[in-house]
Image (cartoon, rainbow, N blue to C red; front, side, top):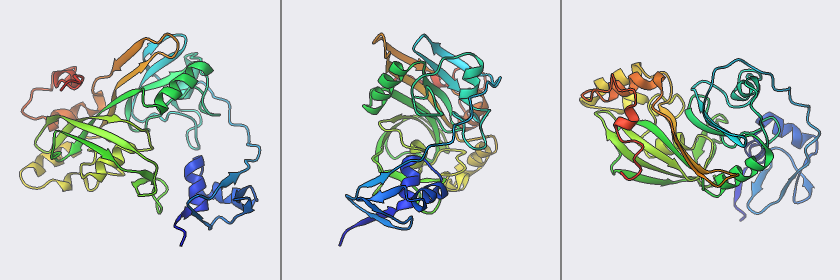
Length: 327
């Protein structure tokens, strides 16, 4: 018996980053074949089958309009820029956010943008809307090609600060678990055997009463990877509305009161892209940039670390030796 995978329309939606209805319309219009034969959207794929998609001419995307959105640029030259993205800012235009994204803000400041897929010029990698921190943007095609290649070959270092519920059993863990879109909820990702390979490592930087502060590093870059993997191992990110797994209710005993207090002051998922290291695509120089714990999550960290005087600390991650990769 041939092992089947998911439905064709779900597969296309995931692989082409389309809505499932859009994928189904492509199939219905006769633009999709399986091993040369026209297929139906409900068709279940079998391993080894070849899916061919003929994309019709797309409607031109709206021109990127400038938007006066304040952004912080931590590094910039003729080839690239590194942005410290605030939480709540969408990276590139999409339905519902055509004119209020990071790209619109970059256009407003006159930043050159080059390479990447249509509608996302310059974008080398993305952050979720409610994840803050460091992001790479390419200014021309060659820089984008080289940075994208470095990212694909795991030569770009990305370190994230994350507050998670509970305590890891060991000081460090490695999670190797495939991820793909959830079969029943297209807005979520999930660990599933037939997903794309995904590897994440995490090390405990500080242990508090109800939570751990982790430095998380990515080997791959799947959608929602850190959030999915940490939830998968039983330590979801504090404030995560999708993968939080019950939030403070996961904590029992004397730590529950503190956990509830942490949750009350947490405005969004406590995940921040705090470190970014790469070789410059044009000069070859090694670059390592850091970003401190964000102000909108300062109260969360202070409440979690009660007993440590972090209230007056302007650089709590540095104080906690987060940026020390030697332990």
